[in-house]
Image 1 (spheres, helix red, strand yellow):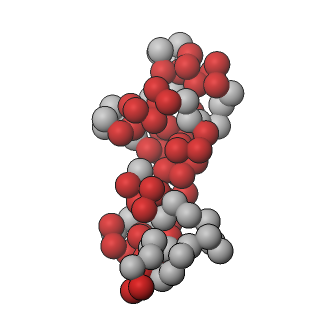
Image 2: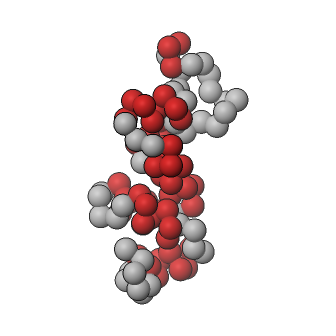
Length: 91
């Protein structure tokens, strides 16, 4: 989640490259934190699409980013059902 937040701005909205004190690109962030681009993309999906309770669970280490990214593809009511244990195999 940290990597996704660091690389949070979309292309064209970054004030300047990292060397100039700006926000790092996705590639720079991945390299700095030793994570893959896919990990950043999944975390961004969680940040954008997951219900707040699911994002909190990821931030607290209760659910992996990978699992949360899959659940975040569901409609909000289904996400909440998965969080409450109502969807078998969700986590």
